[in-house]
Image 1 (spheres, helix red, strand yellow):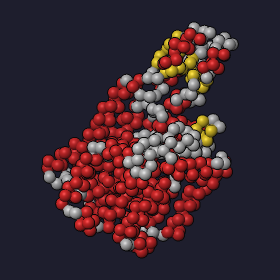
Image 2: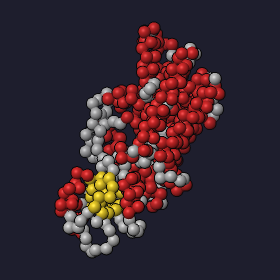
Image 3: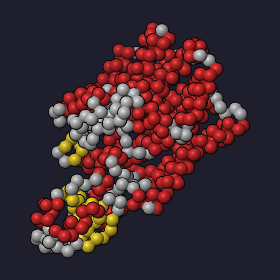
Image 4: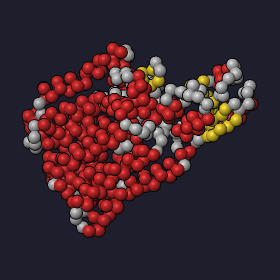
Length: 471
């Protein structure tokens, strides 16, 4: 039984490599972060991530960009390379919660923890996506798992990994790490009254010094190199963004104004296909026991797991500026709680759970193969860039985007994409005559461009959003 589960887990983890390798990077988030990493790789600037020339990216710390830029320098594949670090971060998170489950409930439940977590919809997507959230989840999971194991008297290494996890989170996302780690531990102390146990379990003074040693140099260097970073990142990204759903100070996009409480719906979507199972288990438990009695039946480990699973969702209930990825730090512990509750002993339930494990990956692989065959269904400029390269007589011929070029165009264009306003392009079109001109324009602007162009233009190809034209 355990051997079959092990091979199922290996297949599940490696299946993500297929879409990581074949699907083009899409706008906006994935292509944006990949382009920031590409700029870091080609510039050699490992302190400040750059949004574009002369515009620093103050929205996130650099840990994920360091990993992605390194992968671009070391690994083949314009898609696989920047996605691979997220897969490694996912693998680390899987190992951490499996190790915790092994101590709490044995090898069988540890494997099911890994299977449940890895087959959650949003987890499966983010396990091979160019985002920052995988590293953030790795950091918060490392700290909370380490705290739980240190409280149980496990090996001393866990005491120090707690502070390394904090450093990972602070370099991947920022001070939010302290909230999503500190709140579950603070709630656990209030619930159990074991504040002395927590104080003795971890080397707070030396561990805190280790966290500062690993993180503070970069924060100071970033502020020195691009003054204003700390104010924007600490005050803007962590306070203004949380309190103001329509925050106008966002330098890199638009705020996400959602009704308060939407995070719970996003959690349900993110945890599919397991969210109905988790809710059904909760209903069953409440039917059998009153809330007070159920609380007394939870041991201290389960209390910590429950708080770790709920805190991210509860915290972002009070913010309207949210994304689905904000629930990710709680999902490892939701998977662990579900696995510890059993459900695989009955043969019929065992079959259902295995079907659930392969459901989302199978759908993802099917959808991935479809869009690989029909790439025009995605918001990506990869095919248009390939068309331009095939038609260009020399590498010196730039591709001009009318308006602001999408991040995927900048990433796949590798510095050959030029942005112009329509009026600027009309003023220089055909002057001086020479090599063919290549211009990408929104489909709705093709007619007006042809009508006003001083030179005849021929459409070469098109994708979902743009047409590539040449004289």
